[in-house]
Length: 550
Image (tube, helix red, strand yellow):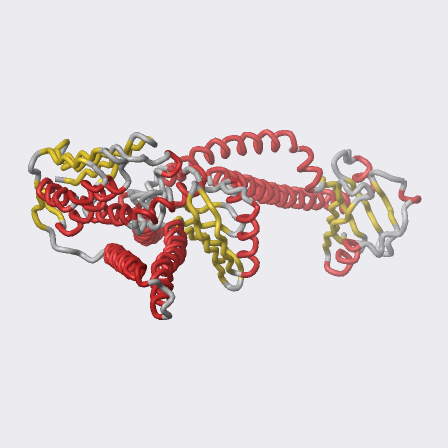
């Protein structure tokens, strides 16, 4: 802006100077022309008076250096000329000034010379005898006059332009200085030109509007970040070129990305071909899905195109963890298959024995054995159904009332109930510890202790031992059941709490187990937020600890 003001001022000054010089030169030239014309007329009157008195003798006595005198007869013949031989000159009757003098007594004319650098002024007067006396003088043209004055004019112009440039610089700086110091962040606090007030008011209004919009956008952005930050699902937003606009914390964990990944192409974060193909498909068709494993978990990726005016401007990727769903589905299928198998086995035994008895194919002395077998398989079937029902209740997560539970009393009660079975296998059961109470569901705690102790007796060796201890440790009540039984191989220890999982199926069938005991223990412990710890060595025994929060 300073430069434009500077150039404008200098241009105006130069234009004014140029116009002033033209006006002055024109005025001076006109003034000089008037003086010269008056002088010619005075000299002509003197010459006319002398010619009237002395005629040709007077004209010959005149020394004319700066002007020229010509005496012309009424028919245009030149009688005398101070600068040429009269006999060699052409007839002057048609000259303008001669015509005017013959007709009106005097005449004037101005004619350009052959060089175009000067012109001739002519004044003529009619004498008493009818002849005409003319006087003429050369006059420089305005161009010649300007050329003669070019040097001083250029000096004056240069000085004027330099002075105007200095003044223009100062003036432009002074004009622009208040503008350069405008506080546009606080436009209403400026003390500057009154003409700028409407502009500053408009800027102030725009600031308010932009500030409100920014605050609104910030609130929406914060809300969006709060929502996405607390999402368990991974959310990724891409722009139209496939670059990452946003990743929530879950998405960063899923893809192993960092916050600095924003702005990078998504293919640089996830290079899997199937994901790249899904992204391309979503941009093309508007939607695609992909099921893939990331970070040891299985995710369902839902990709949806974001469009505006039928043009793809971005892509949303939603990653849903379906690991538990898949595991639950697998467990459901396995549970259904196992239940069908486990129910079918005792039923087939019962049906087979009943058919033999019904058809009279059993010897009288074997009848009791077949009836006993039917009762045993029916009992096994009832136990299996009861265990399935218990697990179903635990899976439903129904809230059950809690009460103060003394786990040592329960352990002693169960040890008493298992004493007969222990005697048959010559296994010793010992219960020790302190009376420790904690808020719990008595029925579920009873199931935990009964299944652990029952397994410890069932899978023990003849003459073995089962030690049940209860102790309070680090804010928890710990139940420990240790046996000297057959133990569990290391490769099976992580799966023994699964439903219907058996380490030795033939041994389990012999002992009448349903394969659901430890699964019931696990679910019952989860209802109490209890931790289970298992240690086992094949041939030496197993120790299982359950720590209940006190």
